[in-house]
Length: 505
Image (tube, rainbow, N blue to C red):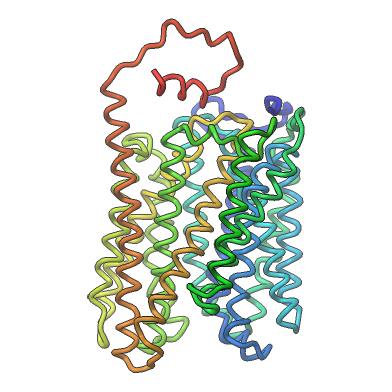
């Protein structure tokens, strides 16, 4: 159990209607970090052919330039979130942001494929600590309600905008040299770090008084790392190969050991009771499905536009831009919209829009036009992410006590990263199986269509879960609940505990 966070007099305040310049500065720094995380994911993908050509990397080795980042990011997010709670959010954020900038510089200077992959893993590891620390700083600085909804809407919009802008920047920078896709974030990270030192609130006490769950940290981190590794490697080794099946068996054993450890630990890495909050549990599953489906969809669209329709990297990036532009332009309005309608209503609408975008792309053929096929899907993607992404982050952290905000942030970010890795691997397997190794336009289409059906089905599952959540929320609001006999003074309880008591009664 951690102590309550007590901020110093110079920490920003959310009191009143207007935000102070200091508070805006704090949000700006946190947005800059998540923007860089998202920017990095999208920029490297377009630069891969140039990287492979210059460093003489095989296709199987080249994919680890992307997978190395995902492995570090997705595998260590839980540990990063808990470290933020235990060691101090500001401290963890500053150190990790510095490492992120250093790893970016290293990646732009190396001439060896192994070193480049190592730099990418280090960079993903740093992002695994900046992302939950930054999100938990927001949720502990801005109180639940309009202020937090507004801040989270801006924050998550910056992440989505960073991904979309990265596609365009990568097309421009790769034409100059692929190394610039690694070097460009360095000065941005440095400026953000200098501002963070000055602007982030300085807590007087934010460390844990209890012990550390070392065994839980080891088993939990190994579980996620091995899962991401196994799914990433399964395509090359074969999904039914002895290696893949054995690796999945080890993942299951580690996961079981982790759950047993967390149920018995005095100070668990993941308090399993957090999932008794139905909204938090559903938000994590929805995050897994919607971002996983989009990761698979984006991969399919990239192959289709470049390989089948012959678009250049820059043409493809500009073609996908409307989705990001819509998200960025909607940022100022999302906070009030969330306040007005609530996450329970917006999540189903947003995920349904994403599902429709994927389903519409099933009409692809050898001569599809941009206005008829690509543009409608991009606009629906923009609407879907503008509504769903802020809502899922708010739902994943609402009702969680301050001392567990890092944990809640780490959980939802882990769901996003692992979902992307798992669904992308599944979509890749279907593309390979459907095309039967052929390079003809028809063979490529035969691979893309089942993969599109797969990502659409995953998104549809997310929509159904969001719809169930909306119906449960509506029923809860229509049924008054009273607990007059419960004595809250009999034990120390937080917002999550009270929600659990109400749910039980």
